[in-house]
Image 1 (spheres, helix red, strand yellow):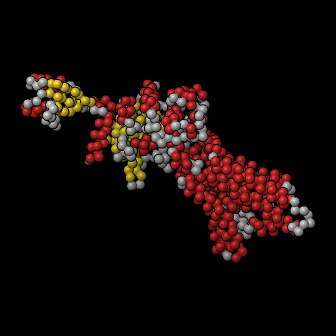
Image 2 (cartoon, helix red, strand yellow):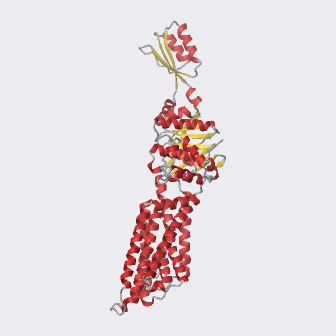
Image 3 (tube, chains in turn green, orange):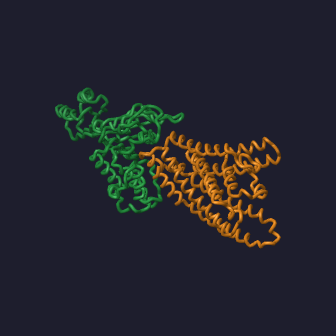
Length: 303
Length: 284
């Protein structure tokens, strides 16, 4: 495991920011870490990067205990609230972070990371003159300097325009191909859905849902049907066999139900047609990350 | 540690406050030269002749004291925000997530500013001596090399001692409160010497003790006085009259070895406390 934590807790005086976090991130994964504002996402990332000390629990990052300085040699981190020395040029900043990583200066490496984040032409400009988006890009370039095995990205596209967001998505996918593990914290659920293969949702400091993206989104299927009026008997058979919570047919002929697997779709179609029902529309709707997120966080809020 | 020291140096030099302080320093040296020019032109046999010995000490002390104050203010201005501002702005996140220990970070910041302070102090001290020599100020022209060296080392230690305390403040407080507190503590040292002197004149042990206590909180003036003594040892009554305050011992007597040991422990202690505190705080 690249990241492994066991009952990680961070408490501040009267408030528990993060409670019993258990994470297992495998090498090469793009791990999405989601949650509403104040859920404990950044606190968790800061504990993993050694900026914040856990109150209890333990963990390992790159096979070293949390906070270990040596582990950070192959760890990249783009903070949420990025701020860099404005008096330095982009090149100066890269050279500064190169020395912090204890690497030898290499103009070729600088050019490569600048090219990757789309700042090759602006490397000689002062960071203070960069737009917010450019500052976020140069921050990403700094994080890429050591050729990281593990990259933490905390809201990496918060200051970027749609093109910049796509660029970052492409960078993330390219890095994964190169074997980099990425821990992504983002509010943009569509972005997470596009790149992550595993996610964890945190709310009020507790992980309320985690799993592979495939399992989370493909687990249940919402089915929308429009057909001629169904009989009482068929309605009861649908409730018995497929979805006990299915609501009665609407006036426009619509029926909505949630299925356990996609395999049940042809069975429903067969049941309806065998009963002489005219089937006009049958649309399976997969859950989106947004619907999963809203459901999970919403349930938590209600409870 | 070296990259942090180098960045701290470069950042400090680029700060507007440093540029302003440099301009103030140049203006001060020009004024000092003008003052010495008029002082030199007080012809022999004039009615001011009898006052000349005292005046030379006064002028020398004025020059030394004001330049020491400039050094310490510059140190406080640069040091107050060196860590606090990076904590406040979040700049420290990207730095401390690199393979860099927190101790290295604090020591790097201290080293960078100490080097800059030392250079500034040396430049100011040299300029002060050269200008004084050029205008034949006898208190300065009669100095031996050893005296100059001793004075320089002691002179250098004053802002370095202030820096150690300021660094501790920088990991504990925000920029402005730290700056204000450091200026207050620095000025308190001058007050301590004065209180002690008054206690000596009044022959009041409690007042003397209060002065000593203040000097323990703020021992910078004691160090400055030692530097002044190294440079103006033979100023006799005039010197004693002007010196007034003598740090821990007061009453114009030099500070004891115990006081020097205390000052060393004070400086190292605050730096160690800064490292310890910074090593334990959460960087949110």
